[in-house]
Length: 143
Image 1: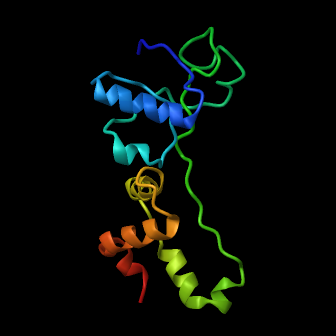
Image 2: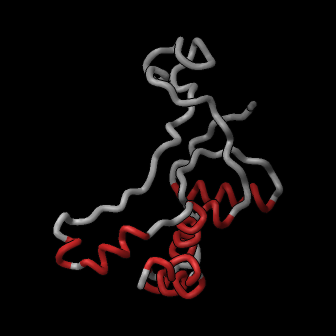
């Protein structure tokens, strides 16, 4: 891909740039994390970069460009973690049962973030709205 890297400087500047690109129908490539509200707001697709391999950040000979560091992608196996106190199953078994069943897709988390970051709902309001609109997702988690 032939593109120029420009540091947006802040998240707000990045979102403004994406919005401007959409308004003018100008293509844009950006480095972002997922899940993120941006994927619930703007259409797009992920670019498949070369696989992340050990040494790509320290040895220029590793990766597709023998003269550059960081020419591999980022690890794609990151995830959000759920955690519970080890006493939770005994003290709150029903809550622990729900926690073990909770599972969200990237798109679902992006939509939740959109409600807070774009629609500017308070987290409690966003949760209530998301739950009301997605009963088929969460109803199997509770007895």
